[in-house]
Structure formats: structure tokens, C-alpha cells
Image (cartoon, rainbow over all chains, first blue to last red; front, side, top):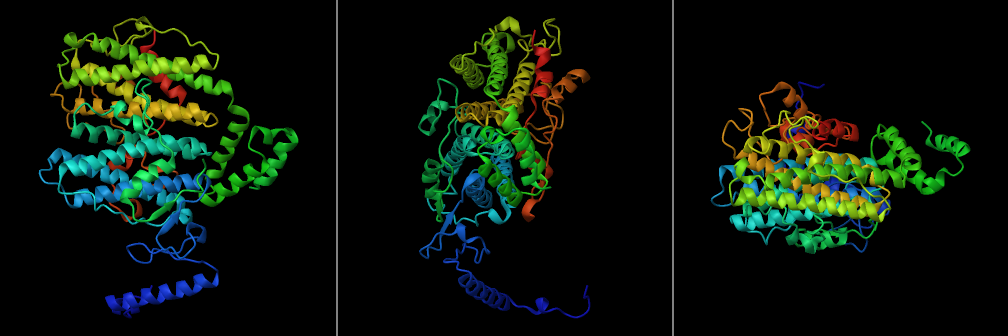
Length: 248
Length: 296
């Protein structure tokens, strides 16, 4: 390891770094065109990396992502939802609503950490098959309002439970099914807690979830198909999510 | 390891193997896919699940899971039926506590009826269970087990409820893979599974609000989710505590599919939150060992 001579990196200014990034980006674009990649998606954070061309849609749409097919597609679907949840709770903790109690703060921090763990797990497990980071749109949420934050949290958690419950049947690998099962019950624990914070005793109000496929008479929780879940989630995601290759 | 050779070998022994699976092409596709998607370490378990799919998963597998779930739901339903009829003796306050336990009772009774309908539709008549089928003291009918005060002591009742709910979640999670070829039953099982998790979350919040001396160990703050392998229950009796701990064994896992969740991706994720973020399954044998003391 070179210890004495100052390296080029140490001399690099922020502008130099930006220039370097721009150079890499142009090089990447040139390379991409060479191998026939028709579009490059850029996330809000800048160049998000090189991913397979089948993750991108054609027509030069640079803000669209295809989840893919088979089990990988289903896992990317879960990854997309976990990205949404993690981003939401990260914001909730960064800008706590007015009058937040110590208990609420403790619970919401835990939930944030769980969702980040889920997101990072999918990212690591999917590796090069992972979709890029999604751009979220939380403009409809008032993060300073308890009602707005907890109402959104409830919607996200119930939706997450319904999504996992509905997607289990789409998986062909028992290993992936077990992994999804390990996560969905934690989402259900979150959903129950958030509901109780809003109205104590509403933790498993299945009648209120009937539009999401719950059956109160049989004691069954919600279950929804990916297109229906994504239609609801799309209000909070700028990136277009193409689920057309998912198993039906 | 040459998967193609292994499949060729199987084919010579069992020419119909691909009828049991999805066709040769799909099987090969799935294996190449697993090889690419996850570490090679996943291949042996993938092979195992393929054999299970080809030779282990039959209609009777589904019936077996449903009968097992039916027993567990009866256990829960009879427990909460007795709780609801013993509110005064237990000292459950009117209002939110009584309402919550009644909601849970209704769900467990609904699960029993639903599973019975499903079993009947598959041509199976499940055994008949009643209150006398179970001993909620945990003494296999002797009535003098460590939870003998379940219907006269609020703390003991909630401790039993928490264990039943957390165990129920782990039981469905462990059995779900056996249902992978029956999409309808699998989805229904998942829909019950998450309801049990909602119950667990609420019961744990009720236990968090307990005053001291209600079986909550000192220094432990109950969460709606399971922290490491903490039961959050201390009966003061070592053998009873050991029995309860079986419901939480392995919940301290902080690695999933060979991925370490602690500080994953450069994020600050402590071991406690890493364990909370994933609930773990239990096998049928493990669940049976847990519930046996409650079955007459």
C-alpha cells in the first residue's frame, strides 16, 4: 500500500469529482450505445449504475423500470415496495411530526430500521438482478401532521401485507416463499401497531380491509395482485414501474 | 456439480420425473436461474426442494398441513372462548382490553370454521375438538401446570396469549412451503398467518402496559415485534420458562440467506432490529413439542 505520496484522489476537489463522474457517465453512455442499450435510467441521486438492458424500457423513457419475470420479478416487486416504505419512514424520523411522543418516536424508529433492513436485504440478495433505486413522491404527505403521517403509514403497512399475501402464490421457490413469509408477519406487526396508534383496538379490523381482499367472516387478512398494489403505490412513486412480465 | 447430469440420472431411475415437476425445460431454467441469482450455496437446498416437489408434495401434504393448522386454531379458539367468558375472574377491564380479546376470539373461531370448510371440501372430516380437548395450565389434562392461573390472573393469561400468537405465526410460516403447489390454500394460509401476527402485535402492546409483577422480566420492554430470542415472559419457574423459550428459539437470527443484516449496506442496523425485521419459521416437530403440554 502506497503511504507517502499524495494520491490523485486526495487532490481531487468536488468539481474534479463531478467532472470525473461526468466523464464516466459519457464513457458509460458511449459504451452503452456500443452494446445496444437503448436507454439509460438515472435516479435522483445521479448515475445509479449500470444494469441490464432488460430492466429498461425502450423509447428513450429514462424514468421507468421493469421488474423482470419469474421469481426475480416477484422479489423485485417486494424490493420496490420496501424501498417505498424505507424512504417514507426515513423521512418520518428526519422530520418528526409535531407533538410526536417518545413512544411513537421509538416505535417509528424501529419500523424505519426494519424497512431499511428489508430494502437492503433484497438489494443484496438480488445483486445484479436488482432494479435501481426508485424516485419517490411524498408531496401528498404532510410530514408535520400526525394524522397525515400515521394515515400514510397505515396505508403502506396494510398494502404491504396485502402485497406479500397476494404474491406468495406467484413464487416457485420454497426458499423465497419462506423469506417472504419472514417479512410479511413483521409488516403485519407494524400494521397492527400503526392502526392501534391511530385508534386503539383497530389492529386487525378485517372488515375495513375488505376492499383489499380481506374476508372478515373467515378471519382472512388482505391479499392483492401486483397490478392492484402498484396502482395504489404509484401515487407515491415517480418512477414508472412495469410489472407486465411478472407471473400471473 | 453438474446439474444436468444429476437430472439425467434421475430420469433413468424415474422416467416420469418431469411430469412430477414442470417439464424438463422449466426445471433446467429454474436451476440456471437460481445459480445466477443466488450463491451456489443455495443449490443443494434448491435440489432438496425439487425432490420434495417431485416426490414429497402430494394432496395429502396439503391435508396434513390443514389438519395441523386446524388443531392449532382450535387450541387458540378454545383458549380465547374461555378468556372471554372469564373476564371478571381474570380481571380484564371493560373497554379496549375486553374488546381486543373478543376480536381475537372471533378471528380464531372464524379460522376454525373456515379450515373445517376447506377440509370438508377436500373430502376430509377433521377430528372434533372442544374445551375438554385442551389443558391451558400446560399439564396435559392434570390441570396443575405452570399456567394454571391463566383464567384467574391477567398477567398469566396475556403471557399464554402472547406465546400462542407468536407460535401460531411461526407455525404457519413453517408450513407454507408445503402448500406451494396449491395456490388457493397457500394464499388462505398466508391470509391467516398475517392475522395471527396482528394479534401478536396487539397482545404484546397489552403486555407492555402491564404493571410490574405480571410475568414481564425486569429490564425488558415489550415490543410489538420479537427482539432477538427474548420471550419477554418470566414465570419465576425455570422449567416453565424453558418451555416458553421454545417458542422463541432461533428468533435471534441476524443473517438471512447468507446475508448479514447487521449494518447491512452501510446502514446503521443493530442486531436487535436486524432480528426484529424477520420472523423465523418453526418446524412441525418443534411446534408439536411446544403445544403438546396443552393437549389432553
